[in-house]
Length: 135
Image 1 (cartoon, rainbow, N blue to C red):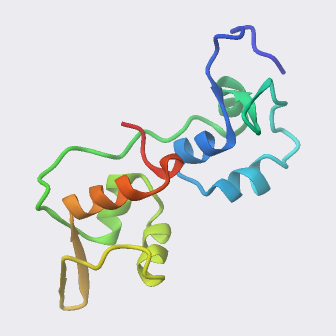
Image 2 (image 1 turned 135 degrees about the vertical axis):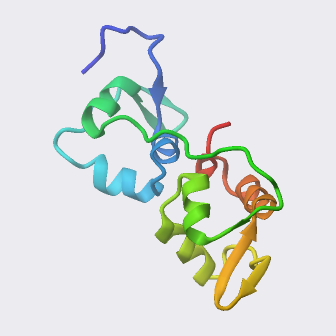
């Protein structure tokens, strides 16, 4: 369905949808885009179909508000706090840690792993662009 907003209306591709909603690209492609209510593409960008942002939001709801807040770079964060700070699921961060895909904790006291906010920011900057939160 083409929106009356016209060609200047915001358009999203699958990696952008994944990033905005804090989901894996595979989830967007293999779960959301195959559902009957998914909007029809309105164009292409590279090899990706483009979808009107308003149509995507109508199909799955508005993207969550960014959870990132400025703070002290030396503040220590737990996995749950990292999830809230980055807008990623707690399970995603925990999986990165368990698979060795996350930096070593800056502090591991009494079995509680914590990372400095600066360490979290550096990790986010090193990840693929579509996985990083929008600035």
